[in-house]
Length: 115
Ligand SMILES: Nc1ncnc2c1ncn2[C@@H]1O[C@H](COP(=O)(O)OP(=O)(O)OP(=O)(O)O)[C@@H](O)[C@H]1O
Ligand SMILES: [Mg+2]
Image (tube, rainbow, N blue to C red; front, side):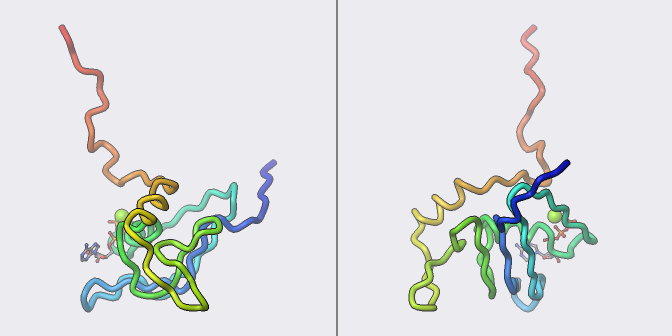
């Protein structure tokens, strides 16, 4: 039996991302609740990695908002206006978000032969 608390952990709202004229993410909405496992499926180049990179601030977003837990990612909201977080604050947010890169074997994992 799976028990989920239905508490939103990751919330993506109206996310857009452009690379120049290339409109890669066109209004993505996604909520992942605490304890849930979600799978994002799509053709190569459809923007799966770009979306994940936006969540941990490896990319700046073009529009929309992303929150993880109680924190708005990359911005502080004051009186309804968004202000960029400082580099140190962004680093603190990144430390709380894990990401496994597609090419997970960037580093040698085999034990080194010592004979
Ligand atoms: N840094 C970048 N600069 C310009 N275009 C980019 C950049 N990163 C990704 N793109 C483009 O954005 C689109 C989405 O790429 P992305 O890597 O997010 O796709 P994906 O769904 O993860 O693909 P795959 O299944 O191959 O991993 C592609 O057209 C890609 O060429
Ligand atoms: Mg990818």
